[in-house]
Image 1 (cartoon, one colour):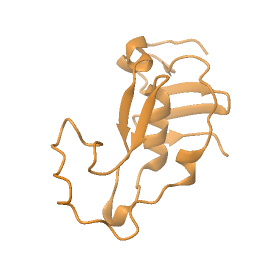
Image 2 (tube, helix red, strand yellow):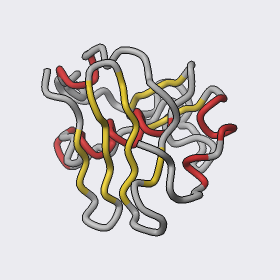
Image 3 (cartoon, helix red, strand yellow):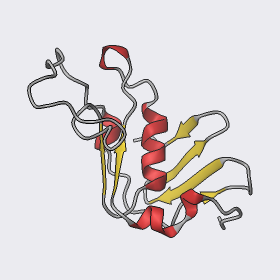
Length: 128
């Protein structure tokens, strides 16, 4: 599929630098929009990227990190879901907007398509 629109997520620099991405953590350490967060990560990431959650680095530079030892540990912590342990393979190109101004972004990987519909906030990742 050819790129139709021009968008910041398409820009080569956004996908060719090292980036830090954080997962959305809800109440009781749930991951309420895991598929959408992983889809965005896979669409926008470059060759080197970090995905994580929590206070230690994932909210910087927007929020200061707490001092070591000031945050009590959570019982059980945040789960490590199977989805973030999957091997999507190599990307087959950069992220594209499927139609100009449509708000739906796609990137092809060896394992299949990754998509994020920003209008519906709905992510799509390959079935593993």
